[in-house]
Length: 118
Image 1 (cartoon, rainbow, N blue to C red):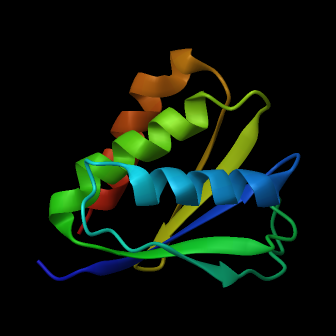
Image 2 (image 1 turned 180 degrees about the vertical axis):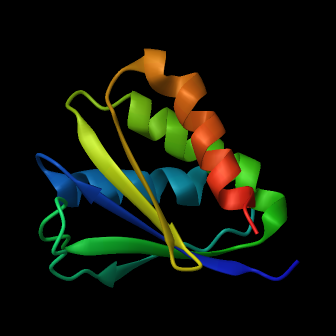
Image 3 (image 1 turned 45 degrees about the vertical axis):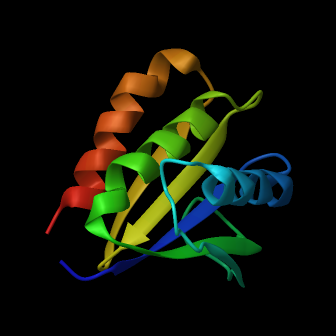
């Protein structure tokens, strides 16, 4: 399967610092070797996420879906404050919000299923 471009946008208190923290986690994780996420300038979102200053874009090979899902889940469930994350790929979107480790299993399954969709 070819790589698919995936975009990750964060909103909430201090969303700029949060997106950079997620970017650092994606770059540093050993379960996603060779992953090359990059920051791109965001734009106004007419829906509830409002202005998203920076978006993480990454080309994902299907062999990395589980690793990326794990990084995203760990990051999202360990936030001190609630944050929202929007993942976009192939014209589809998945909106997640969490801030509680109890949400981890549910979020992991949602992210894996979303990334694995055809």
